[in-house]
Length: 115
Image (cartoon, rainbow, N blue to C red; front, side):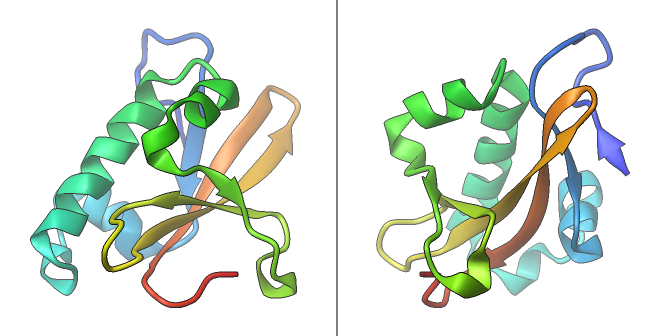
């Protein structure tokens, strides 16, 4: 399911979830006990920033996101956004090019080495 966060928003960053559990976390708050509270809070703040972004350049300009392309072969085509500096939680996303432009596939919350 591709989601345009705001129905009155004609352009901007669109996204969908690869992982059903993240989709449920976002829409229903279900599963938030799987992560530390600060990670869940930051996840929702990041999703709000994605909502507010006009395009990917906005995300790159927000230095606090630490939005970066992953280099490891396993993560080809993936990017990460920092959810927490001390525990290394990252929101892993993929950029998908579509006819309407770029959308993000929200892949996972990862606290392991991500490359």
